[in-house]
Image 1 (cartoon, rainbow, N blue to C red):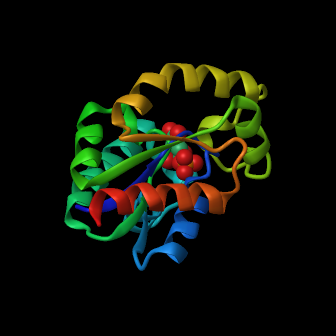
Image 2 (cartoon, helix red, strand yellow):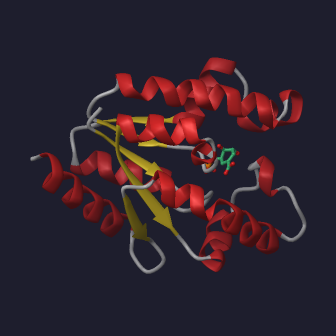
Length: 171
Ligand code: S3P
């Protein structure tokens, strides 16, 4: 329950920051997308394509509910996990929630290398990112205890900032 939970849009740096946080802490690591893939025995892309987004969201909510059972864990979440109010409630119970924010331009740069994300298989990625960020803005804010802007900071700087806030709260 005293976990560090990272939320934010695709490409906001959750996985990289989580790995940097592990070096600062002695915490273990959990990625909700990885757990879904392990449980389903399929990739996220496969699940979206063959079972649909609603099925993926169902698995995601189940994982979210189980996060309360973890302690001292850095939890990196899928970018859409905050969309359901019940997931937001589960996240808040499981730990301190840090929202990683990045501009549309920065997000576009960061995701350019990774073509696997099912929701970004569109021609005009910039437009899609802009629209999704606008649609999700309130859900991200509602879920977060702290907002961290990542545009002009290194992964290590963001991790250090989060670790300082967390320690101030729990130690
Ligand atoms: C999603 C983000 C992805 C993954 C799925 C849906 C989203 O995770 O959960 O493709 O709705 O934003 P990342 O944010 O780790 O890419």
